[in-house]
Length: 210
Image (cartoon, rainbow, N blue to C red; front, top):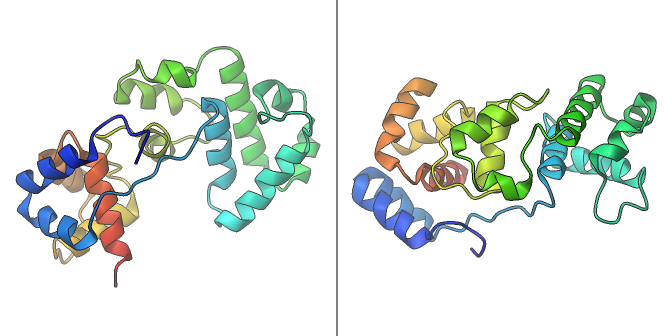
């Protein structure tokens, strides 16, 4: 649990007090065990997110590995400069679609120009501002930005209300006959502030249970 910028025990206690129904789910699932994924940079994290979109983890890992293999001397990982100096056909040869090549190149340009914050600089930005800046990158939508905030930065109060699996999890956990709309889920999640990330994690875990 190390590395999270908030106290999980405090978050869980708050959610239990704020929502008795969620408290039952928390008791069933057990301790909060969300783990942050290590990030060497904003560029590295978002480049990986782009490659992994709409692919199985196995297929995406293979393609990402091929991209990394283009730069054997980049022991700390490839950089925007590497991507911008690589012909399109080499990137396509790794298995990247045309759309993903354009997205990774756009990301590289924006990082190289200083348009996107560094990993250090993200800590001084509010969630809404950071999401607004990230979604300007081609191929990075709101959901990808939210996943970055949750699982890379450990932001405690993110509710990805457009996420289908989260809406499904909410319907299952709270015994709803129909999926809530994103707006309905956003409204329902108000009671979970300022720990909506933690609530989301528990709902996802509940969906995984038979």
